[in-house]
Length: 87
Image (cartoon, rainbow, N blue to C red):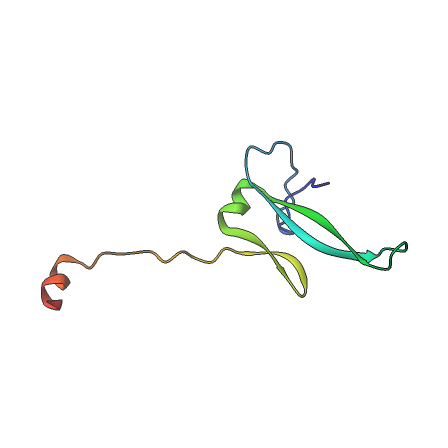
């Protein structure tokens, strides 16, 4: 059960789901004794509203971690004077 923000530097308690973001990952578990197959389970992580603005959860070989959100490319129009010089 998710009870706190997944950002280890935050830890804000989860009271309501109206803010923040839930992440769900399919994680390999142990070996099932009855058939010898590896079990799978879903793990849930929550980032509070403040952390979700700058972070996301990622799954890698090292496990599931909170990482900084990749910055979206910002389109900035050229200044007017530069537009005339470029043409």
